[in-house]
Length: 361
Ligand SMILES: *Cc1c(COP(=O)(O)O)cnc(C)c1O
Image 1 (spheres, protein in one colour):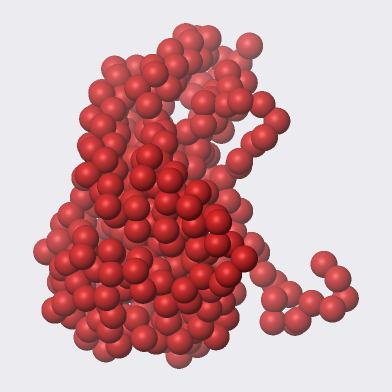
Image 2 (tube, rainbow, N blue to C red):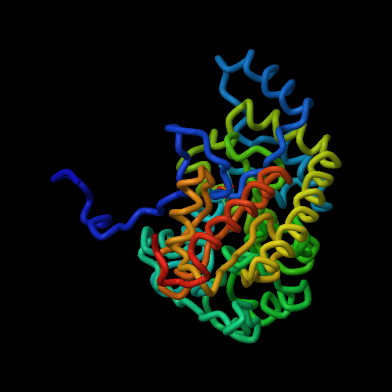
Protein backbone atom coordinates (compact mmCIF):
# COMPACT_ATOMS: atom_id res chain seq x y z
CA UNK A 1 0.00 0.00 0.00
CA UNK A 2 1.26 3.50 -0.78
CA UNK A 3 0.90 6.65 1.28
CA UNK A 4 -1.55 7.93 -1.29
CA UNK A 5 -4.44 5.51 -1.06
CA UNK A 6 -7.82 7.01 -0.29
CA UNK A 7 -8.80 6.38 3.31
CA UNK A 8 -12.08 5.00 1.95
CA UNK A 9 -10.26 1.86 0.87
CA UNK A 10 -7.88 1.46 3.81
CA UNK A 11 -9.59 -1.65 5.15
CA UNK A 12 -10.40 -3.24 1.81
CA UNK A 13 -9.92 -7.00 1.47
CA UNK A 14 -9.89 -7.77 -2.24
CA UNK A 15 -11.62 -10.73 -3.82
CA UNK A 16 -9.16 -13.54 -4.51
CA UNK A 17 -10.01 -15.35 -7.76
CA UNK A 18 -9.25 -19.05 -8.20
CA UNK A 19 -5.72 -19.79 -9.38
CA UNK A 20 -4.89 -19.63 -13.07
CA UNK A 21 -1.50 -21.36 -12.89
CA UNK A 22 0.89 -21.04 -15.81
CA UNK A 23 3.78 -23.04 -14.30
CA UNK A 24 2.67 -26.53 -15.22
CA UNK A 25 -0.28 -28.30 -16.77
CA UNK A 26 -3.02 -29.25 -14.38
CA UNK A 27 -6.31 -30.93 -14.91
CA UNK A 28 -8.04 -27.70 -14.09
CA UNK A 29 -11.19 -28.23 -12.04
CA UNK A 30 -11.00 -25.11 -9.89
CA UNK A 31 -12.80 -22.22 -11.60
CA UNK A 32 -15.84 -23.78 -13.30
CA UNK A 33 -14.78 -23.08 -16.86
CA UNK A 34 -16.22 -25.14 -19.72
CA UNK A 35 -14.06 -28.04 -20.91
CA UNK A 36 -15.41 -27.49 -24.44
CA UNK A 37 -14.01 -24.94 -26.90
CA UNK A 38 -15.94 -21.98 -28.32
CA UNK A 39 -17.95 -22.79 -31.46
CA UNK A 40 -16.44 -22.27 -34.92
CA UNK A 41 -18.82 -19.35 -35.45
CA UNK A 42 -17.48 -17.60 -32.36
CA UNK A 43 -13.86 -18.08 -33.43
CA UNK A 44 -14.61 -16.64 -36.86
CA UNK A 45 -16.58 -13.70 -35.49
CA UNK A 46 -13.86 -12.74 -33.01
CA UNK A 47 -11.16 -12.93 -35.69
CA UNK A 48 -13.26 -10.82 -38.04
CA UNK A 49 -13.88 -8.23 -35.34
CA UNK A 50 -10.15 -8.03 -34.67
CA UNK A 51 -9.69 -6.35 -38.06
CA UNK A 52 -11.48 -3.25 -36.77
CA UNK A 53 -9.76 -2.94 -33.43
CA UNK A 54 -8.50 0.52 -34.43
CA UNK A 55 -12.06 1.75 -33.92
CA UNK A 56 -14.03 2.04 -30.71
CA UNK A 57 -16.70 -0.57 -30.23
CA UNK A 58 -20.43 0.25 -30.02
CA UNK A 59 -20.89 1.57 -26.46
CA UNK A 60 -24.55 0.52 -26.53
CA UNK A 61 -23.74 -2.99 -27.87
CA UNK A 62 -27.00 -2.77 -29.77
CA UNK A 63 -26.65 -5.87 -31.96
CA UNK A 64 -25.57 -7.94 -28.98
CA UNK A 65 -28.53 -6.68 -26.95
CA UNK A 66 -30.87 -7.63 -29.79
CA UNK A 67 -29.40 -11.14 -29.97
CA UNK A 68 -29.68 -11.51 -26.19
CA UNK A 69 -33.23 -10.15 -26.11
CA UNK A 70 -34.34 -12.68 -28.69
CA UNK A 71 -32.85 -15.67 -26.86
CA UNK A 72 -34.05 -14.51 -23.42
CA UNK A 73 -37.53 -13.57 -24.66
CA UNK A 74 -37.40 -9.94 -23.50
CA UNK A 75 -36.99 -6.55 -25.21
CA UNK A 76 -33.59 -5.04 -25.98
CA UNK A 77 -34.07 -2.25 -23.41
CA UNK A 78 -34.24 -4.98 -20.74
CA UNK A 79 -30.66 -6.19 -21.36
CA UNK A 80 -27.31 -4.70 -20.36
CA UNK A 81 -24.19 -6.51 -21.64
CA UNK A 82 -21.23 -6.29 -19.28
CA UNK A 83 -17.58 -7.21 -18.92
CA UNK A 84 -18.26 -10.49 -17.13
CA UNK A 85 -21.15 -10.76 -14.69
CA UNK A 86 -18.87 -9.55 -11.89
CA UNK A 87 -19.33 -6.14 -13.51
CA UNK A 88 -23.13 -6.24 -13.37
CA UNK A 89 -22.94 -7.27 -9.71
CA UNK A 90 -20.71 -4.27 -9.02
CA UNK A 91 -23.10 -1.96 -10.88
CA UNK A 92 -26.08 -3.41 -8.99
CA UNK A 93 -24.42 -2.93 -5.59
CA UNK A 94 -23.69 0.68 -6.59
CA UNK A 95 -27.14 1.36 -8.03
CA UNK A 96 -29.43 -0.37 -5.55
CA UNK A 97 -27.76 -0.36 -2.13
CA UNK A 98 -26.45 2.33 0.14
CA UNK A 99 -25.67 2.76 3.79
CA UNK A 100 -29.36 3.00 4.56
CA UNK A 101 -30.31 -0.07 2.56
CA UNK A 102 -28.35 -3.14 3.60
CA UNK A 103 -27.72 -6.05 1.27
CA UNK A 104 -28.85 -9.55 2.24
CA UNK A 105 -27.39 -12.72 0.75
CA UNK A 106 -26.78 -16.31 1.88
CA UNK A 107 -23.89 -16.59 4.32
CA UNK A 108 -22.33 -19.31 2.20
CA UNK A 109 -22.37 -18.09 -1.38
CA UNK A 110 -20.30 -16.33 -4.01
CA UNK A 111 -17.32 -14.69 -2.28
CA UNK A 112 -17.64 -11.52 -4.33
CA UNK A 113 -20.82 -10.35 -2.57
CA UNK A 114 -19.19 -9.37 0.76
CA UNK A 115 -16.25 -7.81 -1.10
CA UNK A 116 -18.57 -5.58 -3.13
CA UNK A 117 -20.56 -4.64 -0.03
CA UNK A 118 -17.37 -3.61 1.77
CA UNK A 119 -16.06 -1.79 -1.30
CA UNK A 120 -19.15 0.40 -1.38
CA UNK A 121 -19.64 0.70 2.39
CA UNK A 122 -22.90 -1.23 2.38
CA UNK A 123 -24.18 -2.97 5.53
CA UNK A 124 -24.17 -6.76 5.10
CA UNK A 125 -26.85 -9.14 6.29
CA UNK A 126 -25.54 -12.65 5.84
CA UNK A 127 -28.36 -15.17 6.13
CA UNK A 128 -27.34 -18.68 7.25
CA UNK A 129 -28.20 -21.65 5.06
CA UNK A 130 -30.23 -24.54 6.43
CA UNK A 131 -28.18 -27.43 7.81
CA UNK A 132 -28.48 -29.28 4.47
CA UNK A 133 -26.96 -26.18 2.76
CA UNK A 134 -30.21 -25.18 1.09
CA UNK A 135 -31.44 -21.58 0.96
CA UNK A 136 -34.70 -21.10 2.88
CA UNK A 137 -36.71 -18.60 0.84
CA UNK A 138 -38.81 -17.75 3.89
CA UNK A 139 -35.76 -15.95 5.32
CA UNK A 140 -35.99 -13.36 2.52
CA UNK A 141 -39.70 -12.57 2.57
CA UNK A 142 -40.19 -8.89 3.40
CA UNK A 143 -36.58 -8.57 4.50
CA UNK A 144 -36.37 -4.87 3.60
CA UNK A 145 -32.90 -5.13 2.06
CA UNK A 146 -31.52 -5.45 -1.41
CA UNK A 147 -31.37 -9.22 -1.90
CA UNK A 148 -28.72 -11.11 -3.85
CA UNK A 149 -29.06 -14.85 -4.35
CA UNK A 150 -26.99 -17.07 -6.61
CA UNK A 151 -29.34 -19.66 -8.10
CA UNK A 152 -28.00 -22.32 -8.29
CA UNK A 153 -25.98 -21.25 -5.28
CA UNK A 154 -22.21 -21.45 -5.20
CA UNK A 155 -20.30 -23.38 -3.98
CA UNK A 156 -23.08 -25.85 -3.09
CA UNK A 157 -24.73 -26.09 -6.53
CA UNK A 158 -28.15 -26.28 -4.90
CA UNK A 159 -31.05 -24.47 -6.57
CA UNK A 160 -34.29 -22.78 -5.54
CA UNK A 161 -37.37 -23.46 -7.65
CA UNK A 162 -38.93 -20.61 -9.67
CA UNK A 163 -41.90 -20.43 -7.29
CA UNK A 164 -39.60 -19.70 -4.34
CA UNK A 165 -37.78 -17.03 -6.33
CA UNK A 166 -41.08 -15.43 -7.25
CA UNK A 167 -42.20 -15.42 -3.61
CA UNK A 168 -39.03 -13.50 -2.66
CA UNK A 169 -39.46 -10.96 -5.46
CA UNK A 170 -43.16 -10.51 -4.71
CA UNK A 171 -42.56 -10.07 -0.99
CA UNK A 172 -39.98 -7.28 -1.46
CA UNK A 173 -41.71 -4.77 -3.75
CA UNK A 174 -39.70 -1.88 -2.30
CA UNK A 175 -36.32 -3.47 -2.93
CA UNK A 176 -34.35 -4.93 -5.79
CA UNK A 177 -33.85 -8.70 -5.83
CA UNK A 178 -30.82 -9.85 -7.81
CA UNK A 179 -30.83 -13.47 -8.94
CA UNK A 180 -27.34 -14.48 -10.07
CA UNK A 181 -27.90 -17.22 -12.66
CA UNK A 182 -24.25 -17.90 -13.49
CA UNK A 183 -24.96 -21.66 -13.46
CA UNK A 184 -28.62 -21.88 -14.45
CA UNK A 185 -27.99 -23.51 -17.85
CA UNK A 186 -26.69 -26.68 -16.22
CA UNK A 187 -30.10 -27.79 -15.02
CA UNK A 188 -31.90 -25.22 -12.85
CA UNK A 189 -34.91 -23.10 -13.80
CA UNK A 190 -34.44 -19.49 -14.81
CA UNK A 191 -36.32 -16.49 -13.43
CA UNK A 192 -35.76 -14.44 -16.61
CA UNK A 193 -39.43 -14.59 -17.66
CA UNK A 194 -40.40 -13.00 -14.31
CA UNK A 195 -38.48 -9.84 -15.25
CA UNK A 196 -41.46 -8.91 -17.44
CA UNK A 197 -43.81 -9.15 -14.47
CA UNK A 198 -41.76 -7.56 -11.66
CA UNK A 199 -40.02 -4.20 -11.89
CA UNK A 200 -37.74 -5.06 -8.92
CA UNK A 201 -36.13 -8.22 -10.31
CA UNK A 202 -32.66 -8.22 -11.87
CA UNK A 203 -31.35 -11.50 -13.29
CA UNK A 204 -27.63 -11.77 -14.05
CA UNK A 205 -26.08 -14.18 -16.51
CA UNK A 206 -22.54 -14.98 -17.62
CA UNK A 207 -21.05 -16.63 -20.70
CA UNK A 208 -18.02 -17.69 -18.63
CA UNK A 209 -19.38 -21.06 -17.55
CA UNK A 210 -22.06 -22.24 -19.98
CA UNK A 211 -20.81 -20.59 -23.20
CA UNK A 212 -17.06 -21.32 -23.15
CA UNK A 213 -16.13 -17.62 -23.02
CA UNK A 214 -14.55 -17.09 -19.58
CA UNK A 215 -11.54 -15.39 -21.16
CA UNK A 216 -13.66 -13.08 -23.32
CA UNK A 217 -15.46 -11.58 -20.28
CA UNK A 218 -19.15 -11.38 -21.14
CA UNK A 219 -22.16 -11.24 -18.89
CA UNK A 220 -25.65 -9.72 -18.92
CA UNK A 221 -28.09 -8.01 -16.64
CA UNK A 222 -31.72 -8.67 -17.52
CA UNK A 223 -34.53 -6.75 -15.87
CA UNK A 224 -37.18 -4.08 -16.12
CA UNK A 225 -36.09 -1.25 -18.37
CA UNK A 226 -36.00 1.15 -15.42
CA UNK A 227 -33.46 -1.01 -13.59
CA UNK A 228 -31.42 -1.44 -16.77
CA UNK A 229 -31.38 2.33 -17.35
CA UNK A 230 -30.07 2.89 -13.80
CA UNK A 231 -27.30 0.35 -14.32
CA UNK A 232 -26.43 1.68 -17.79
CA UNK A 233 -26.05 5.20 -16.39
CA UNK A 234 -23.37 3.99 -13.97
CA UNK A 235 -21.75 1.89 -16.69
CA UNK A 236 -21.60 4.97 -18.94
CA UNK A 237 -20.13 6.99 -16.08
CA UNK A 238 -17.33 4.54 -15.41
CA UNK A 239 -16.55 2.49 -18.52
CA UNK A 240 -18.80 3.21 -21.52
CA UNK A 241 -16.94 0.75 -23.78
CA UNK A 242 -17.14 -2.02 -21.20
CA UNK A 243 -17.61 -4.91 -23.67
CA UNK A 244 -14.87 -4.88 -26.29
CA UNK A 245 -15.45 -5.29 -30.02
CA UNK A 246 -14.23 -8.89 -30.26
CA UNK A 247 -16.35 -9.96 -27.31
CA UNK A 248 -19.45 -8.23 -28.68
CA UNK A 249 -19.11 -10.12 -31.97
CA UNK A 250 -18.21 -13.37 -30.20
CA UNK A 251 -21.31 -12.96 -28.05
CA UNK A 252 -23.61 -12.46 -31.04
CA UNK A 253 -22.15 -15.57 -32.67
CA UNK A 254 -22.53 -17.53 -29.43
CA UNK A 255 -26.25 -16.68 -29.35
CA UNK A 256 -26.51 -17.87 -32.96
CA UNK A 257 -24.84 -21.14 -31.92
CA UNK A 258 -26.86 -21.41 -28.70
CA UNK A 259 -27.85 -25.00 -29.50
CA UNK A 260 -24.19 -26.10 -29.46
CA UNK A 261 -23.71 -24.55 -26.01
CA UNK A 262 -26.93 -25.96 -24.59
CA UNK A 263 -25.87 -29.41 -25.80
CA UNK A 264 -22.51 -28.93 -24.05
CA UNK A 265 -24.35 -27.98 -20.86
CA UNK A 266 -26.38 -31.19 -21.08
CA UNK A 267 -23.14 -33.16 -21.57
CA UNK A 268 -21.67 -31.51 -18.48
CA UNK A 269 -24.86 -32.29 -16.52
CA UNK A 270 -24.63 -35.98 -17.51
CA UNK A 271 -20.94 -36.08 -16.55
CA UNK A 272 -21.86 -34.41 -13.25
CA UNK A 273 -24.40 -37.12 -12.40
CA UNK A 274 -21.97 -39.96 -13.34
CA UNK A 275 -19.16 -38.37 -11.35
CA UNK A 276 -21.37 -37.74 -8.31
CA UNK A 277 -22.40 -41.39 -8.27
CA UNK A 278 -18.81 -42.61 -8.47
CA UNK A 279 -17.66 -40.21 -5.76
CA UNK A 280 -20.47 -41.48 -3.51
CA UNK A 281 -19.23 -45.03 -4.15
CA UNK A 282 -15.84 -43.88 -2.83
CA UNK A 283 -17.55 -42.66 0.34
CA UNK A 284 -17.86 -38.96 -0.51
CA UNK A 285 -20.83 -36.89 0.56
CA UNK A 286 -21.97 -34.88 -2.47
CA UNK A 287 -24.54 -32.08 -2.42
CA UNK A 288 -27.33 -32.34 -5.03
CA UNK A 289 -25.80 -29.94 -7.55
CA UNK A 290 -27.59 -28.37 -10.52
CA UNK A 291 -24.41 -26.53 -11.56
CA UNK A 292 -21.21 -27.49 -13.39
CA UNK A 293 -19.42 -28.37 -10.16
CA UNK A 294 -19.73 -30.75 -7.25
CA UNK A 295 -19.34 -29.82 -3.61
CA UNK A 296 -17.92 -32.79 -1.74
CA UNK A 297 -16.47 -33.95 1.55
CA UNK A 298 -15.12 -37.27 2.74
CA UNK A 299 -15.32 -38.40 6.36
CA UNK A 300 -11.78 -39.82 6.27
CA UNK A 301 -9.77 -36.93 4.89
CA UNK A 302 -9.86 -33.19 5.56
CA UNK A 303 -10.78 -30.80 2.77
CA UNK A 304 -7.37 -29.14 2.89
CA UNK A 305 -5.50 -32.43 2.71
CA UNK A 306 -7.53 -33.73 -0.21
CA UNK A 307 -6.92 -30.45 -2.05
CA UNK A 308 -3.14 -30.72 -1.49
CA UNK A 309 -2.94 -34.37 -2.48
CA UNK A 310 -4.94 -33.82 -5.66
CA UNK A 311 -2.66 -30.92 -6.46
CA UNK A 312 0.40 -33.17 -6.09
CA UNK A 313 -1.26 -35.34 -8.71
CA UNK A 314 -1.71 -32.33 -11.00
CA UNK A 315 -5.42 -31.97 -10.36
CA UNK A 316 -6.54 -28.55 -9.25
CA UNK A 317 -9.84 -28.15 -7.34
CA UNK A 318 -11.15 -25.30 -5.17
CA UNK A 319 -10.82 -25.36 -1.41
CA UNK A 320 -12.26 -22.57 0.74
CA UNK A 321 -10.71 -21.83 4.12
CA UNK A 322 -14.02 -20.45 5.51
CA UNK A 323 -14.63 -22.55 8.61
CA UNK A 324 -18.14 -23.80 7.93
CA UNK A 325 -17.11 -25.31 4.59
CA UNK A 326 -13.41 -26.12 5.18
CA UNK A 327 -14.20 -29.86 5.11
CA UNK A 328 -15.33 -29.52 1.50
CA UNK A 329 -13.86 -29.09 -1.95
CA UNK A 330 -15.61 -27.69 -4.97
CA UNK A 331 -14.79 -29.70 -8.07
CA UNK A 332 -15.60 -28.37 -11.54
CA UNK A 333 -17.22 -30.91 -13.85
CA UNK A 334 -14.83 -31.21 -16.76
CA UNK A 335 -14.69 -33.58 -19.71
CA UNK A 336 -15.33 -37.30 -19.00
CA UNK A 337 -11.60 -38.20 -19.24
CA UNK A 338 -10.74 -35.47 -16.71
CA UNK A 339 -13.31 -36.85 -14.29
CA UNK A 340 -11.94 -40.34 -14.83
CA UNK A 341 -8.52 -39.03 -13.75
CA UNK A 342 -10.10 -37.34 -10.74
CA UNK A 343 -11.85 -40.53 -9.59
CA UNK A 344 -8.65 -42.57 -9.99
CA UNK A 345 -6.60 -40.00 -8.06
CA UNK A 346 -9.20 -39.70 -5.28
CA UNK A 347 -9.30 -43.51 -4.96
CA UNK A 348 -5.49 -43.66 -4.64
CA UNK A 349 -5.41 -40.85 -2.11
CA UNK A 350 -8.08 -42.51 0.05
CA UNK A 351 -6.29 -45.87 -0.12
CA UNK A 352 -3.03 -44.14 0.88
CA UNK A 353 -4.78 -42.36 3.74
CA UNK A 354 -5.27 -45.85 5.21
CA UNK A 355 -8.94 -45.11 5.69
CA UNK A 356 -8.20 -42.84 8.66
CA UNK A 357 -8.08 -39.09 8.80
CA UNK A 358 -5.08 -39.16 11.17
CA UNK A 359 -3.05 -41.56 9.03
CA UNK A 360 -0.49 -39.39 7.30
CA UNK A 361 2.48 -40.97 5.56
C1 LIG B 1 -18.34 -17.22 -11.94
C2 LIG B 1 -19.42 -16.48 -11.24
C3 LIG B 1 -19.76 -15.16 -11.56
C4 LIG B 1 -18.99 -14.26 -12.46
O1 LIG B 1 -18.58 -14.70 -13.62
P1 LIG B 1 -17.92 -13.74 -14.69
O2 LIG B 1 -16.79 -14.53 -15.22
O3 LIG B 1 -17.49 -12.46 -14.04
O4 LIG B 1 -19.01 -13.52 -15.67
C5 LIG B 1 -20.85 -14.59 -10.94
N1 LIG B 1 -21.55 -15.24 -10.01
C6 LIG B 1 -21.23 -16.49 -9.65
C7 LIG B 1 -22.05 -17.17 -8.60
C8 LIG B 1 -20.16 -17.14 -10.24
O5 LIG B 1 -19.82 -18.35 -9.83
